[in-house]
Image 1 (cartoon, rainbow, N blue to C red):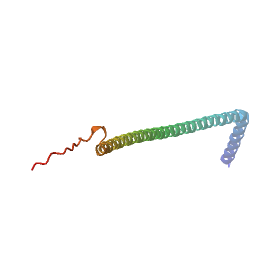
Image 2: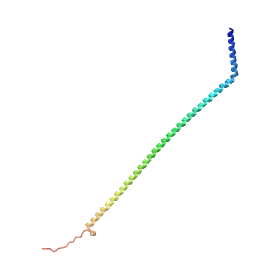
Image 3: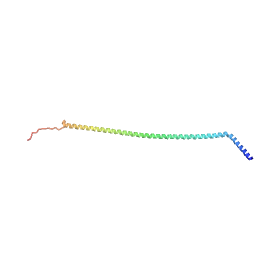
Image 4: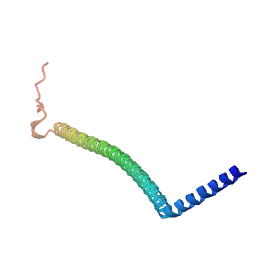
Length: 150
């Protein structure tokens, strides 16, 4: 029973001393807890800032990539348009050349037709002169009476 009483008193004394020590160091412990909380808070804030910066960088990279793709598409479309314009110009030039050749051919045909018409008119005129005997175009016929030979 004495041992129990002693153990009980020792336990009460230890408990009392722990409470006194805790009371003495309460401010120190609270300050340490507060310091650790602040430190953990700073670490979390730092991690959050790093994560936000990483996400921002990712967004910037994606935006640059998207802009680069749009630029490439725009350049491809411009190249296609330039090629199409070049083909259209070539086709128009060829068409103009063909028209010019056709007009030239028609002119030559008209000149030839005019030349043939003039030649035909000249031949007709010559034939009419021969028929009419103008400009000594027909040999003169001479008629003479010969005495009758009996």
